[in-house]
Length: 246
Image: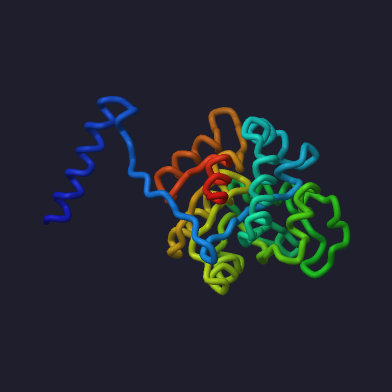
């Protein structure tokens, strides 16, 4: 009964604050302290199909990518990871020919299959990979291919439940994640949710991501709400770099 009364009081308080204006309707801001040996940067899907003007999704994500300066902000995070010796993890998205034998799919999942997004010819072959939509954006390769960056196995829908990212983080004693990448309300948000459920602290870098914009649907704005409701912290790239430096 006491806990129920507390919950009702909290809901009533938020309702009163909201009624007095958005400036007062503030959620708690737990924050996240970066600790050496326990913190990593995780980037989801830093691939051509999302971030290159030649990518298959550029027509719907390009505006958001440009507005947020997403390509450069991801670059800044990767560069900072190397400068400050913070482990860098990549959680990529690949589809192989056998994945196109699935019998059902969600809306955006179906679209990705239809347009050949992230397609590779084989799990073990790199034939045709270089410069393809599934390949890394060219400017990121110097960070990803340095022999130190951990590239997880591919996630297949949106979240890390289907790859080994969590295992790779746990095996290195990491329990704090600075999260960025593509796209905001799909893979990035799904990674945030699962990592939080797995007991990680997560800070999302809000301008090092972007999302599709369609008539009546703004994936980026949707993601910002959920980041603020769920994550330990929501930073700009400048704020993330300052935290890393300090």
